[in-house]
Length: 109
Image (tube, rainbow, N blue to C red; front, side):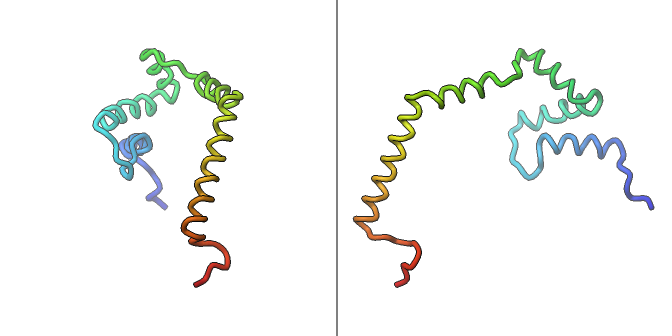
């Protein structure tokens, strides 16, 4: 009985803290903007954020993600990854040869 209601002020505050949690350090700009966005979301829902993005000239979509994925699929990127992996493996083998194996299974001294 009772104690399970949340007044509108507490509900708005929870919306603000969802955008800028107290546990994460946020800059002044984030702390200035978070309440404004929260009021929009609280009053009109998430569609208001789309209106804000449109007014700011921000495009919403997967363009950047798709472009990055296509670049990472290119032959040059694949060869670079293989070369980097081989280089790291070589360095590790050199370290093990020069210092001996420092840790691993059955390495008790």
